[in-house]
Length: 214
Image (cartoon, rainbow, N blue to C red; front, top):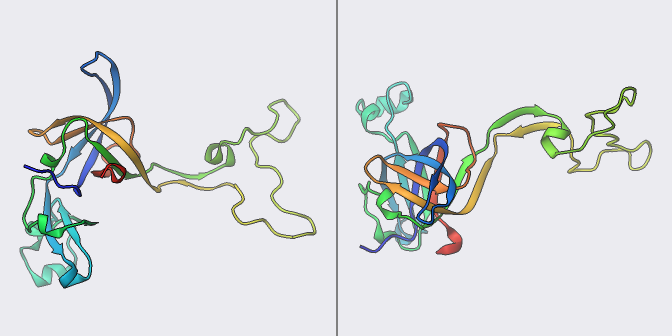
């Protein structure tokens, strides 16, 4: 069976470990638990103006459903997807509503892109946020972990836009491209990729076929 060029998976980051490959080399890997995916809608150029596929992941329960949803259908708590993601595709005719075995589209040595949300670090200083070296560490310098002078006394009289300063750090969407798939466990629904991926443990991860290899 020919594999689809555009496939989107969602999973949870289990954690990192290391395994030996066929060449007896120790490889650092990340284990991703893939959730069951369902194609809930197929968009075509004739009906919607573009080709895309909506994937549904997981199942909602009563506490996740809104009041309007429960009013429309009392069974929505058992049938509605918990998360919806849409992906542009070249040909929507390859998909049909109800497809669920999307993990089978991937195999060992495939190249994928992994998208996730980085860990939130809260309000951080310039040394942690921007890797500043800081000032002298000796006593009496009064300048240890600060960013130094930011503005001007007269001209231009304000801080230039884009200046690296303390602020909110982390909790941003990041994409790691061109990660190789080391192993796929279809029975347990595990996707093992080489290297690290963004996010904390049990965080939601999106996996797609690498756009640079299509």
